Length: 256
Image (cartoon, rainbow, N blue to C red):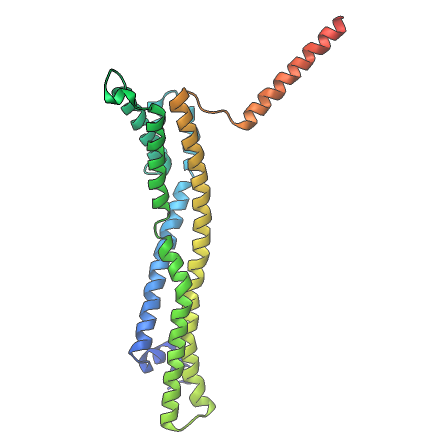
């Protein structure tokens, strides 16, 4: 048999005991789970890139119904669509149940809309964070699982060497090298999981910030009928007003 084949993965599997095989299967299951989560969340992030543009299209719609249809068409199933639908449903509920001398007439419409928006955001946050616990657990435990396989493999190799009574380099290098492969397997599973966890956490934080801003605008619209103007827009309007006022002052001074 070729020496390279005698030290390969097939030889490692053939000469290993049930514990090493169980560790290898656990690492394989961890790898499959982590890559499934990584690919599914990456696909979701690619779809979520157009949600911000859909929100701007929502505000450009002539009325609420048209805006909701726009979100359903361009961001169906997204947290933004769910937030707008939940807010609209709460506002509609308030209009139909807060009139007359009934118990519903004493309800605070602003509080009902606020609670509906908070509930939608809580559900969206839970959906965004699903799978992150498993990904973090895999990233933190996979190296130790591989290290356990390495320690057990070295122990198993030393026992075989002591039984055979030969401790030459060619007898030690193969079993010890094959045992160290388990550490490499653990790192191969853990490193992508840790990197993906950090990337997904950052993407979720940015999406939740956009969702919070959208909820704030929706709350203002349902309460006052108008979206809150951005700080940049107010500053531009203020600077334009100051410029006009200064021109008027200069004109009146020249006339005097």
